[in-house]
Length: 466
Image 1: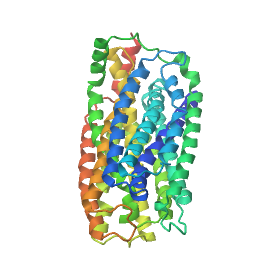
Image 2 (image 1 turned 45 degrees about the vertical axis):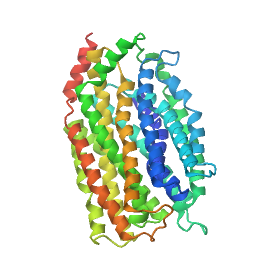
Image 3 (image 1 turned 60 degrees about the vertical axis):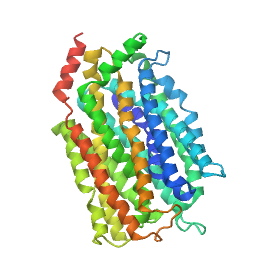
Image 4 (image 1 turned 90 degrees about the vertical axis):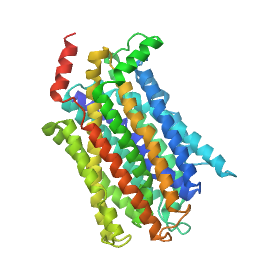
């Protein structure tokens, strides 16, 4: 029961990251491009640069939190320092002033995106790094990570549902609610408050762990730091997850940035219909992913479970696009199409989130595998490097999305139903093969991971014998 309480507060800590992630993946590019009117290549470039910086800051914060000595332990000082900046800069991001030039708007987006990402990371990496110390048991870690991703995804999904059902409701001035700037501005305020509350609850809820957490080793000189990082990051199981994360990150950034474009223009869904998809497909999918991850992990092991779930998601990817291009799908914006895509998203979320849960649990097991060699616990480095691998290149994915929409000829401020079908088909023909190739490479590298339950338990025994 005590661990369940810790799992709960640990899970709640991901709400802010989940909301920020959904905001950047689903709405921010669309908002600045299609609503405010910033050219697609400028909006995608600003977000790509911010994402790459975020990846670099992950490593800095991860390493620093591993080696911080304070009355509040290694992680909590960073978590508390992030509480105020995160909501302030998130609100500013969604409420830009009026600028005379696109370049000034580009700079504003770039600066605000960097600040939001940096301070969210200041909370997320130390908070996430507490996980491997909360429990060292092989299957308990999958349970713990399931809860973390449940809260992260639910935080983002609930805000998405509110966005489509409440903030982006059609009005007389904006019959297509996705193009209403006021809805995005209100969203910024509401999301910021929820993020702040979740961060406070998680920080305070895990405060009692501080006296029993690992104390950092003595400060190193530059040569020792370099040697430690080399030994840590060259762990073979970590390297394959890192490389797999690079391809998965590019695929995720590419897919997420185009998601609202596909829903709005390719499928012709209204804001209400997109909200329905989020509620009836994504929410059950998240819950199902927790069950799938834990069940398959116990019967097949984490790696094999991740490969199976990833392969199902990959095989499903092209199906709806092929049906639409060959005019075999239900009609544009119809309830039949809504049912088809809800089913598609349910399976995609169920399997995709299960992969994420399992990979994060696999990263947790690398901590002890590395500790045998380095004699140090480096949770911060591993989770930040995992974030680095996905974030640095998800920015590339976002930039790819901007290039695809530009090359296909999608105009800024376009209205649903007014775009030539050839443009939409070209976007889909770019998207499907690129996404599938990236995702296939990620599955391949995940398959090279070596740690199983027996290896992990052996590592724990060897560490305890010291």
